[in-house]
Image (cartoon, rainbow, N blue to C red; front, top):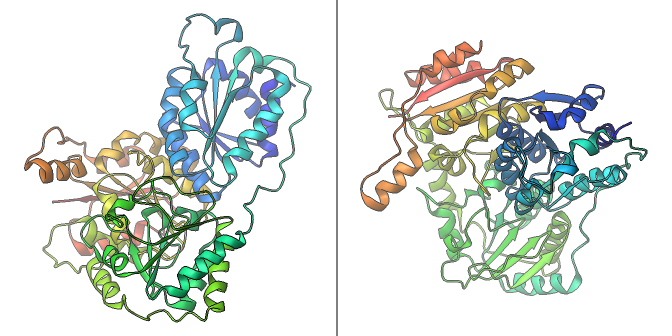
Length: 528
């Protein structure tokens, strides 16, 4: 076996089923090793699409998604999706080719220091410079990518090393590293804060979803009638159908969640990462009493300076909080947030008149009705993302996927393909016209693979979110207007079904038909 074959054997050992990427001269040995393996190679139309596919696959499954490129421009194209995975805490392993070792000391064709370039956007990366380290490198890449908090890793394989004979065997994966139980002194301090509290509130972050802590969190808030507000990436940790849910931390039309935090006397954050939502929005005066429950210590930030940090396995910590409340026989004020929840629900469920123009917010209840609780909505980035984050009611963890770390446009169409691979549920990829056109070519990849998901395309012929912000700041906008193709004809050119509803009844019919179907389809919603 050569080094490339051992690398691919390592992927098989790790349970990898798909590698998303583009072939090149410098990864030729890896390509043919993939051909002879049980791993399915998925040729994509752009390396960014490959990275987004690996990103979404990792976030939904907890197993590292894998993307592949050649050197130079292939690697630079991969970079954005790798960075997105790293900031969204999605496990991903990127593999890039490189020229031979004998040429790396001089300027050469397409040569970039790819390892140095990927270092700031990964948890760990390395060049496989010797066949004897390939097995350890693959195992470390997956172990590092997948343990909490997960993220991206990167391996570079020079073409001459890839072709060298290799006599090492892939390393067998072991049980994943898990965080310890919470420490007694921290829990004792939390117990004191809970004993003095009357109106605690919970903020559920990405970690509550990512670490399967949802069941424990739901039991905790049910036992003590605690309100919960989620970050955009924590949606579904507690069902929005639950009377304790205040939906999401707001940064838009409704401010009830901030009002609830302001009225509370103790904030318990569970799996919260400040990259998800700036604490300055809900702790502007820096005087909120905070308990930080997470797998890592809190970032140092003046608006997020927790009184107590419980650093441990998140689910185990939530169970300890539950026990603390039972031990002190906690009797928190009941139902103080009920009116706030009623206002939120009324706001997120508008009933348009037949002649009203389409808005993202008003479309979402129709989409929700067309989707089962376990179906997955993946949002691209733009003004529609804000509406989805704040208004799309979510019932189960990991069923509303929003990128809010790097928050990169273009993730939705390729991400929908990966989501369809990762789950048996129906998938909807929601996108604006700006993000759609960035990676629309991956529709061809999806049709070639026979994938079945729905692209919900909101068209406003501009970069709408930037228009809104410019108008808010300056009273006018510049450089945001777009000219689009006929999206229905564009979609049909790939051989997929396309809808362009012109009334609310037609919208309902289109979504009801498209979402549960066994076909790839596009529903274009033209916004006023």
